[in-house]
Image (cartoon, rainbow, N blue to C red; front, side, top):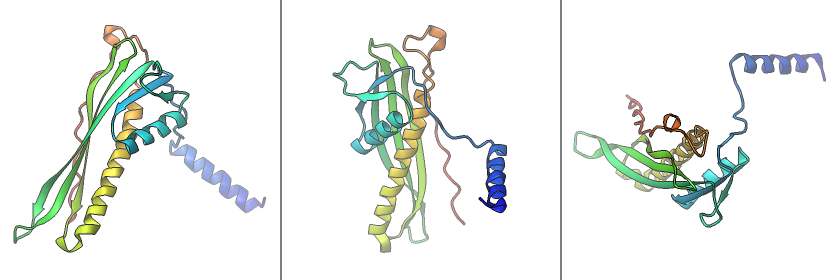
Length: 183
C-alpha cells in the first residue's frame, strides 16, 4: 500500500469518527420471538428483514407461541395541496399512516395503540398522469420503508415484557411537517 493511499484511508477514518458517524449495529429487543398481524405483505416482509437482520429476534406466526404480538394497520390518503389559476390540481399531499400496538403473549400492553404519520408533497400534471401515478407509488413505498425504520426504533424502546406501571411505553402520535413547496 502506498503512503498516499494509507494517508487517505487514515484521514477518511479520522473524518468519519470526528463527525460522530456510527453504524446502526445490533438492536436488543426485549422479546426474541415476535408475531406480526395485519399490514401489507411488502411492508411486513421489509419489517421481517430489518428485525431479523439487525437482531437475534425472529418473526414467527401467531400460532407458534410468540413472546410479543405486533398489530399493524396502514392507511393511505391523497389531498389537494394547490390549484392553478384554472382550478386544476397542481400539487397533491400524499399521506401514509401506520397504526401499531404491541402486546405480550400474556396480553400485557407493551406499546399502546400509536400512529406513525408521514406525508410527501407531489406536483401533478394531467399531461403525465401515468408517470405521476408511478411517482406516487414510489413515494408511498418510500414512506412505508421510513415507517418500518421508525417502528423498529420504537420497538427497541420496550425494555421488559412485564413492565411496572411507571415503566410503560407511552403512545406516540406524531405528525410529520410538510416540506416547504418549491418556488
